Amino acid sequence: MCRWLAYQGSPIYLDELVYEPEYSLIHQSLEARKAITRVNADGFGLGWYTERSTPGQFHEVLPAWGDENLKSLTHHIRSHRFMAHIRSSTGTQVSRSNCHPFIIGNWMFLHNGQIGDFTKVKYELERRLPEYLYIEKRGTTDSELIFLLMIKNGLRHTPVKAIRTTIAEIESVIEEKQAGEHPFKASMCISDGDQFWVVRYSTDEQPPTIFAKPQQDAMVLASEPLDSDPQWKIIKPQTITHVVGNKTIAYPIEETSAFTLQQKATS
Image 1 (cartoon, rainbow, N blue to C red):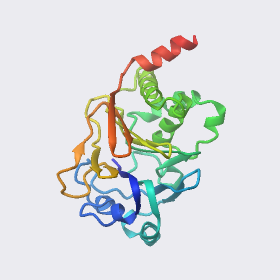
Image 2: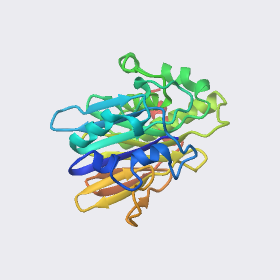
Image 3: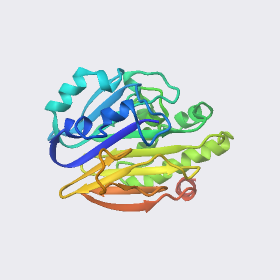
Image 4: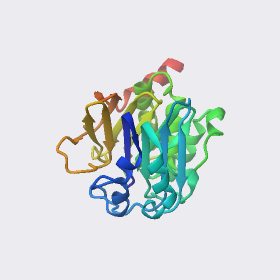
């Protein structure tokens, strides 16, 4: 399983979270504490917002702990909102196009987890993408496909509904293809450049961890705490958490209704 972090608040240098904490993301690339896979060496990525309309990004396939470019970039890039991700592949190749976060326009997305038995449902899920989104696909991961399905389902206009609809749609295809032997697990962070939506969900109700640490004018989110500060609180499972500034609103994930209702409305 991968590890990730996200930050929004007063501008800081990226290395203040990526490198400096006791259990930084770089430390986790060598020894994750709350994951099945302890070493995360299949590439990494950064995505950050500035005053420009679209975010910047940097992807590399080397292990994060040994990349001097990453160390230099995080030391010099200052941002009010950013994401960082270290990858442990669940089967797809190690390539820059498969590194997170994924970006389309002003939207940014990252994911830890997997669609169980992805090869059985990949074709059907890809067929559900409209052409204008299918041609945006660069890699081969289930993560990027989830992001594109969310955009197809209305992420730009109604994020919570789009997330619910996408989860229900994926589950409907898993059921249709009888591909539910392994669970669909999702620890996700999504941003439009102004706020975050965080998803912690699994069909076996044991989703990957996400922790939140509110600060005076900021919010830090991470797969596992970056230090021993007791302010870290785990995000509730089976929820979508909307993060505005350092405040959160949690919504339950309705497993069956969203996609069914959309199907009925368009039939």
